[in-house]
Length: 272
Image 1 (spheres, rainbow, N blue to C red):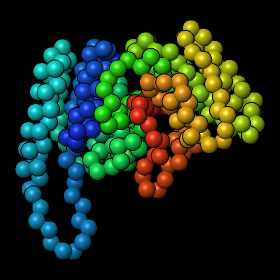
Image 2 (cartoon, one colour; image 1 turned 120 degrees about the horizontal axis):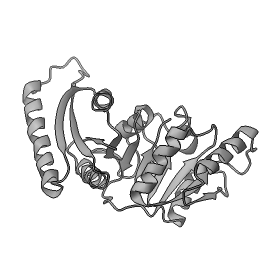
Image 3 (tube, rainbow, N blue to C red; image 1 turned 30 degrees about the vertical axis):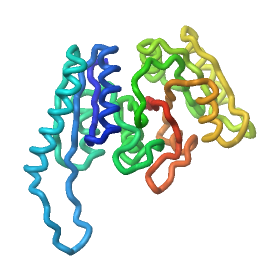
Image 4 (cartoon, helix red, strand yellow; image 1 turned 180 degrees about the vertical axis):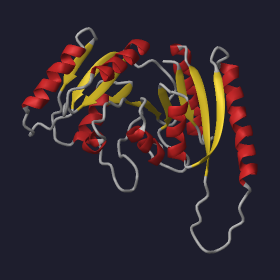
């Protein structure tokens, strides 16, 4: 891993996630790209509203981002850092920067200002669904610690590609973690040949990794997942979305643009 992209909205949660990213960067000997996107104002009514000129907004945002960069540089002098300010739509600009900077990982807060602190917010959920690189979402107030146990929630709807398991193994090695594989399959569901083949394939791929396989006892997958994480004292949850369906299957993803996974641990999403 060479480059970690860290979007920030200057909230306390975002600064906390930036510090978490710096710890990961220090461990991986990677560089940090700090990104702030000045949102494009969207008129919502015919009533005239006094607008601050965009160049003034960009100037202030640049100053605020440089302040954050200095804070991090003072604490982590060994890390190379770059600060980028863009103007546009937040999600689109994050994804464009991911591609431009060839980011290997995106680290961002679980939610931004004004949202409940324990649910995945709009921007984080969208980035998890659309980013090509892994996305690590950090809940409010969670400080960096190497997770002794990483929990992989997997529904085995398809064989996990080698590139994904290689990425997973990289993070297991980076953190020195044990892997807990949680089979997200309701007890009432039939085990198809496809699921069985996918499970065997994953077991073979992880043959040289310290891991254990677990199954849910009930049909409420959200509840089962959260209880499993608590019971096993997992330090990080890993998801491998298959065409984004996994996000909908495991969690109740609503049209109110939030994912009701109540978690106090980081969530790592690795795409195929």
